[in-house]
Image (cartoon, rainbow, N blue to C red):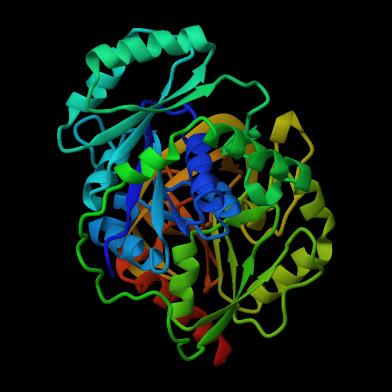
Length: 464
């Protein structure tokens, strides 16, 4: 495919407004320029991509070197951009923040360099004037391999403040023009929760409209034409042989995937990988449906926020009984983070609530919400159901802990990096065919092997 124009929206730190600016640029390119925009998110984030999807009408993809490898990043970018006119890539944390302080590995800068994509740097100017120039110069000179094509100043207080900022940058920073000055507006704020923004899928119609209003407001203060001109267009390495889905493969198994207000943390690439491996995916709601779909061979419970609607999950006993019956009958189940929590005996502690809400009880342990964030890239050796023996790269991101764990509990993962559940272990083994872990996995990392094994496990059940 021809090299697609591409730009990275990065921040000097977290919290400077990257998502708001990225969404505004996507909105302007789509609505004002009539372009097909392919969105991406650097890092393992599940929530920000839901905002990309909402404003572009497409499916955002994650680009993470630790989870996917360099080859996986290139393959994902190439395949996702088919049919698109421009790619907008939202960064993660600060531009150079990656796995450690030693180098750029797994940072936004790392992905920008792999893709040959110029960077638009978002700076929160609310408490600065001339110092903004020092910040910009530092970022421009820190790594000469990264091209900062322009600067967007966020949270600017007034015309006078904007004048100071322009003067400072004009005198010191000549290679990166100001591409936007966004006025401070207390009404332009995206709703947040303990893991970051509230997923766009959960927002009511009125609040979704507010996202579009915010995108329109911000986009009117950005020079979108200059951003288009700044896009990188150089050639990329060719994609490998792992294709996007072009022809439906022979169906091997049907997998029920939990998707609703409580469970919506899925990488689009993982769902595509399952389809390539021969899975037919059907979706269900543990919150709203009374039972699992008929004719299924496996269950997938992704991450999300089961603690928020734990009362409704608890009250839906028919669904809990349906899941328990299927798993106890030997049906494979795979759960990640929120899915793990749902499979424990109970969830308690959200917003200080002491009452324990009863869950599926397929894991002999209880989930307690805490104020302590667990956030890590992870690595583990796996030996258990679903994935068999494998070396895994993943990540963990949660505000909970699993307690009162039965002494006879078995674990499939031995952690080499990250926390896991307890004592360097993760991945509860459920019966002979089930697995639930705090670790989130990206199936691109193993050349579709993980998807193949998950589908194979379900296909074995279907042949029983």
